[in-house]
Amino acid sequence: MLFTIDREYVIISSMKTKEIIRIMIIEENKNTIVLKNVKCLDLALTLDCGQSFRWVEEADGSWSGAAYGKYLNIKKKRNGDLIFNTTANDFNAVWRNYFDLDRDYTKICKKLKEDTLVASTIDEYYGIRILNQEPWEALVSFVISQQNNIKRIKGIIKRLCDTYGEKINDAWHAFPSAEVLSRLSVEDFEALGTGYRGKYLKKLADDVAAGKIKLEEIKMMRLEDARKALLDIYGIGIKVADCALLFGFQFIECFPVDVWMKRVLEFYPNGLPACFKGYEGIAQQYLFYWARNNL
Image (tube, rainbow, N blue to C red; front, side, top):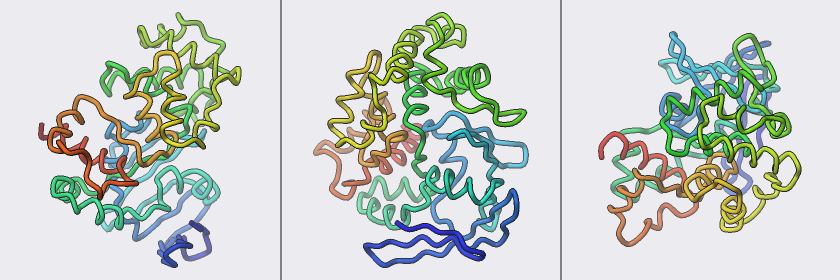
């Protein structure tokens, strides 16, 4: 995919299909970019569905969050325009990939809708995207998520970032690096509310900081090899591994299974349908959201 910004358009082009999608920039100044014609992006469904834990809905309906050491406030207007309160450089370097804007979700959803259950789910919850998060942040976040609820997970991660993360602005801190967290004791982690997960986080931070676990190398592996590498890490089971692979390592074909998805899989006694192939993770997110609200 090619992606460039000029004075009037963000141009996304596919070398394979020769398709060109123009997303007009109707305003670009020091701190604001407005995009039109972005298909399939519902902010609430995407930012508050349990794949990332650092987004907060503001009183005006916008969303504030941080990733890759950068802060963003984003809002979708009634006419569909997306307001990114960020610079063009940060948009192109961080947020374009974070919100997966290079991927044609309209085409993917059309393919997934060959399955009747997913078709009805997409119609009801259209707009869910996969967020491309940092591997380190995703891995730590999903270790914290074990046997936990979203409210508590968000609270622990906020305390972790506020206490040990580098300051971005008056209200937001970056996610702390492995090097920083390796200086903590198990008791330091437990003081944040991590409970028994503290010992897992300590070992994980130590091993990543020391280079014993190479996250970027795992990202380049085949899915099965990457899953095995994560499962070899102390305190990480299959659910945490698959969530991290999908949301932090960009394995879009990964299909995490939790208690909700086990119920969903009862609808597929012969396995996942062929139309999911290559996009199992996107199908999973739609089915997961449907299951939480209907099963």
